[in-house]
Image (cartoon, rainbow, N blue to C red; front, side, top):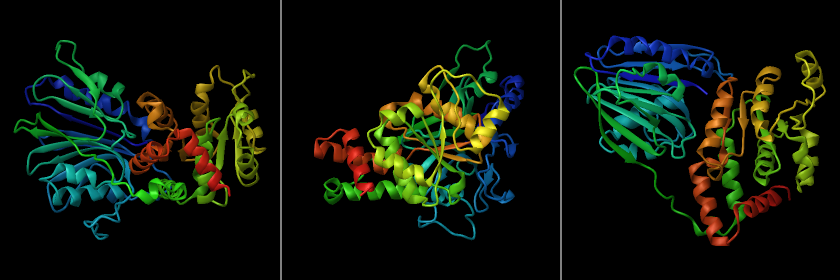
Length: 411
């Protein structure tokens, strides 16, 4: 996970607040260990960025904060835009990475923020500064996969960051009007940029809407599975050696592993809870995946914690056992093992809306501590909308639907 942060404040605000932005910035360095930059936009605020590199060669032209040559636009974004090459405004001569597509897209739809944001298919949290229209835009993806927090205080003061703890150094206890909160998912928030460099809230735009459902898809589980496969494909990185999946006792995690198995026939790493294997009824899937993948076991029984040398030696033999007091720490252990003993960069998990935002936040914090990124296909907007419609139409629970899709994927 990368990290972004920004600060906007009137000139008459205590200078200590501006100085504390440095503390804010460095509290996010664990999210992007491969590069950083922050810069001041004259009297119009400060933007900061920490970069997490996932294998691609570094290109200084796409180091954030980004600037748009045609306009006075400045951008910081923690996100992945999957459809950037499919948009009409895409130009390979000026757009060299996915988040850069935000510039021409905003230029085209600056008068319709809903249309601007709804065209983006991906997970993102961004801060866009338009110095021509004196406007600041904060945006998040529909389900809030990428985090963004906002701190407001004295008139004209606005700070944003990828983690709420990073904003705490900016709070001056001499003022009582501080408000620290999450930027709501599925919204574009507009602020006016004052001549003194402050930010004044204007409006929030809910940009997401219901997807038009095809009756053929709603009534055909095989087409729903095809959409899930395309969702996984667009989220996956080309290098399968750096992709892993977390499997537990839930059907949805096995479905995700089975789909990844089809996406990467050469095999991926799979972190699993050994006890969950015994609880799982899908032993056909287990035996099929076991033949083609590297399995790393995160054991939830209280065992003696082995040394680093012992861990490395056992991992060479495929299986690694580590203990946790609670099975809910399985994912955090998997993230630690992935970062310390493997070359995994991207972890697929079965996070869904049903598990709530707190679970997603826990996954985000856990992965960011170890320089990893998570992918959550079950929270893709299109797939979630379609499976909800299928659930209503078929009168089946989501667990039953996932089991049906899993059976189809293994036929």
